[in-house]
Image 1 (cartoon, rainbow, N blue to C red):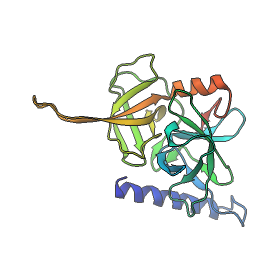
Image 2: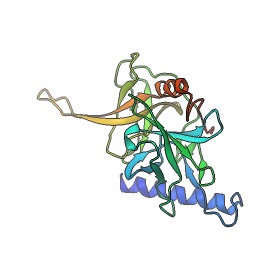
Image 3: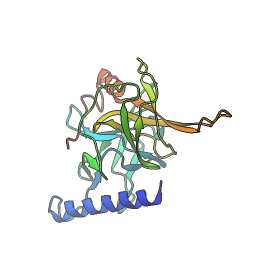
Length: 229
């Protein structure tokens, strides 16, 4: 992660946690709840990844989404910037054939927010169109805006022109502050002899496809709705 961006995120987490604690929203003996939203750095079973979004499912459980290859069912989830290294949740389900996982958070340890470090998720948007403006937030490379770089298709995976490094896995992609996808990997295309510049792409899964999958299964994450702004 870029040093300046990491310092900004850690400072943001500490500041919000301090406000929550001082407002008397927690029991006097409890540690301050960690503010988490789409774009927050998380560690899943030792793998550095990014939280795609957070909210509640149809049962009322506090849940979030990240890349499925970050950790399997039961893997503990630790929040970056927390004052300790104890888990704030665990992976409850992983998509079969789709690279996503559902995290069930402990509501006593996590404060869900829709605006994490200036990156707003104010709902779920429709599938994006080719060249549609989009922004991503990854814990490794920070925020970046460009456009959708692959043609629309029934397939769940598309791409956007954006930097990617390990740790961005699971990060949110939005358009007009509405969640449209989740980062799963990256790709580098070198320049050619005709003068075309090199490009970096972030590959993502349409969030509508993820929701369709969890809703069909009816387990953790089904009926998900992100925390409103």
